Image (tube, rainbow, N blue to C red; front, side, top):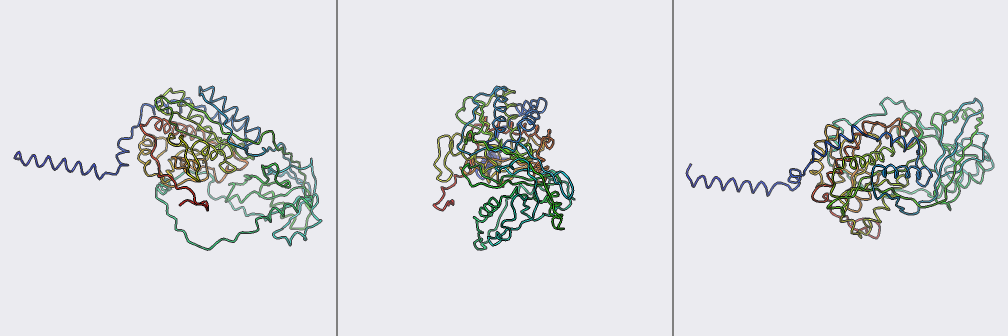
Length: 530
């Protein structure tokens, strides 16, 4: 080949190389150059898998201090325990940061329910949160009542004093032909990676019912002097899972000045159905109940538990991880969400115990008020990072790299919901690759709703919820009396803590902050974003 032809060949190769560089998407470059510290990952795995303390933490949070309703003494004691444990692990800057007024706390101190006639048998049930108890032990007849309009009041006036009122129809309880516990299949994980689309159709404005009718009905029951209102646990096939699960939330108000309500009891569906079917045969049913509940008004404020591992040369920048600390009251709040709280605490322990240097400050947050509307995380984000409606941002907004959340039960982490953040996908792909042996393989562009990362995402901050195997979460444990320590999967939680610690470590040490989506627009006067 002649010298001139060689020269032209070299020029052509250079030109092609430049062209490839110019047309290659920036995200691909980010993936190729995103560093992964495999030596650090080895140390994290060794500590998290060989010396885990996560199940001991789980037992303290559930067996000893559960359940943990926001505003209750149990939650305060659990927070004091967690603060002491984090301090024993060597974390500084531990605070119980007050976020605002929550209202009165509530605990159930005693529940006893029994059918006396026509046969004696025990009843499984729970009081609804923020409802009063009975006046000691009460014996009375059960009656079925259907009140759907104001006209129905006269049908029952003067007939309900001292009665146990069944207020709902008996739900179906179909057989559970499918196992209540499962893991994601490869096909299901593959579907999660696809971009979802939703075609919106205008169907006209929905008619709104009489919003004040439930209050008028409750006032009628109080005026009548009912002993208690009874209702069934939801359909086990759709909520609360298998036979034996009772799904319960609140029935009263945490506002001490709210109107009074009657005692409200949720019974196991099968027990409620037995009473109702007996009444349908015109046979009287006599019940005995004793319910003692306490309202706590010592303080109306609530707090989040915050702790840090200080960074080095980028200590003014922060990586956050967290989970909600509060629970409902029927079980001990094991899978919802002591599991997430214990994983985040264990991840902090791993990072501290290994002594791995981290450039950014790592901050864990255990939120309260999540079960009442994501209150603690929303208040924290508003105080520290800005107003999501006006998009008036604080200086801290520029210094937060990202937030990682866990709140989908005990299941193994299989990936991350990206919340539409395309730019971060190649970063997470690089970090996730060496974690495939733990079961983490999937990035989903989709949004995950219903938990504390949403407050960060609403302000344009990188906030992420992990994809977890569903296990028994929606079918058996979520907000039910079966949400107990035994339903937690130890190996899953140990792996989850290692995964979280690895992600946090790499976020704390990468050169730049995590990529962000474009900032949301401020809300219009009607409350919607442009």
